[in-house]
Amino acid sequence: MAIGKAKSGVFLACMVEVICGKLGPMSPEELRGKIRAAAIAFTDEVIALFGEAFANVASQYKSGAAIAKPGPKKPAPKKAAAPKKAAAPKKAAAPKKAAAPKKAAAPKAKPAPKAKPVASKRNRRSANELDKVGDEVVKLLGANKKGMRVEEINKALGTSTRELMRPIQKLLSMGKIKKSGERRATTYFAG
Figure 1: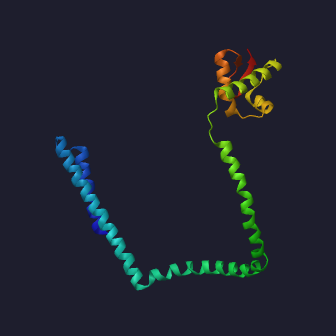
Figure 2: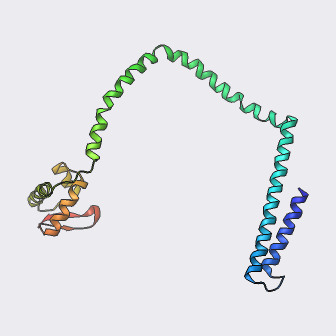
Figure 3: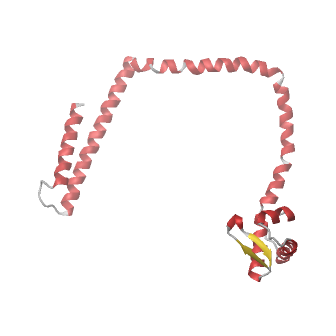
């Protein structure tokens, strides 16, 4: 370790000279060269320190000192594994029979995912479909003079916010409906 300290002293002295400018004015190329030399010296020092540390660990391993440390760690998992084995035979009699119906239940769950892609699948709606939804929105807002928020319109029509946004934007641009407020506080009125 004394070698490492001596090298770090050389490295630090070199860096101090570069930073403080004790060597006098330098060109950028000379400065880069000094910094490179200092970096190489530092890298060599780190490699030497790792080499020493590795040699120490290897010598401890050969002498058997390192083998004693991992020993206590291995029995702990074996102790934890033993109760699992004892619990497994208790479950083996009845639950394995119950596991077979769970496999049978999986096909029942498969039809549900088929419905999800249809709902989340992005289908392009025709102009007629958008107009129909827009007409329903206009009729609903005409019946409610106080105005309605998108959530209320969704509940009344059984739609989602995503389905209503294009028709509402189209109605706003055509002047068939008006709005007041921002974001979730937006209230729509018949135009």
